[in-house]
Image 1: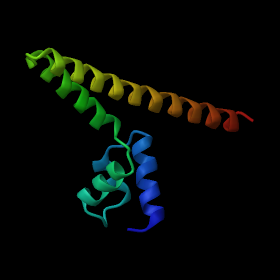
Image 2: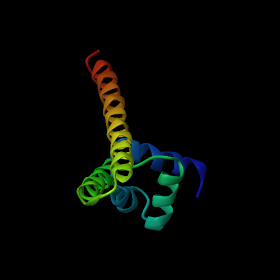
Image 3: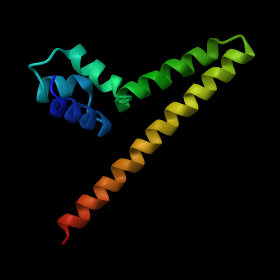
Length: 104
């Protein structure tokens, strides 16, 4: 996989596009797992993936018996929520820049 394709995949994931859509719409020549590992290897997560992780952790939180387990899950949930929030802020900045350019 070349660097340009990798950067495009990571950018699309940052913008909230599902990995399955990146694969089918933008890079059908690659295997789904190639794209998955490229995106996650760059430290990025899709919004849908983060949402699923949050849901799984919330479900696990209700089952946790140990206080330390609950604390660990809560800390992980906080990191995931901060991740989503920072992505949202970044997207809003990009949208504002686009609107400014369009309205000129």
